[in-house]
Image (tube, rainbow, N blue to C red; front, side, top):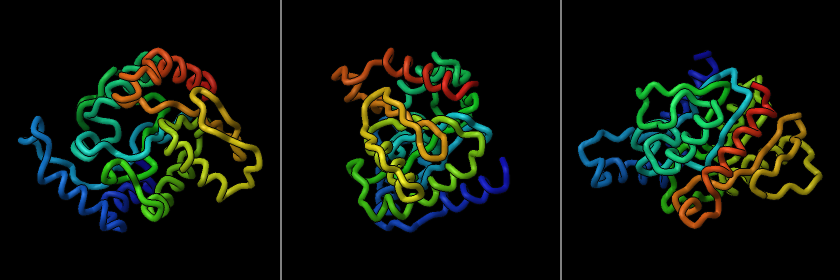
Length: 226
């Protein structure tokens, strides 16, 4: 891992800027979920992971309470992650179709996975000041991934907050709205693609299907050219 990312990730893991989130993570890690009662929870902010020469970035809103907050890796050990990694494997972006823990052998091909918010918020509803406090970490990830060509945002909140950073940095004049599989050219030449979140609710209600997500990642990989 290069020095910049090492330093950034250390800062993220030790971050206690948002007391509400720090307290909530602590509560989750002590109370735990019945099926994970004997496990030691990660219980800290969750960094991004993957190939540091990535051409593709995948962003969610925040780690899951009993997913990333438990395992220490984004989209790892929860149902949304199960759907995501099946799709990534189908598109030949990951070497396996599951992500269970940090030592499960998962490798990403030219891809990096992260969240806008590095801590799980109560009720999956972050406050504006929390998103603002955490945004500089995500901005650094955007800057440090020098080969980045395509960003896939999982869900409207991740999409909107990624866009907010671009609007702050550049003059984004055209109307950009969240619509599944729609791609937008960003001012720095990168492409932003909107994707419905692979949550159990969205899958069960057929808002999005596995085949729709598979198709989207094949398209993203083709645009990113790897």
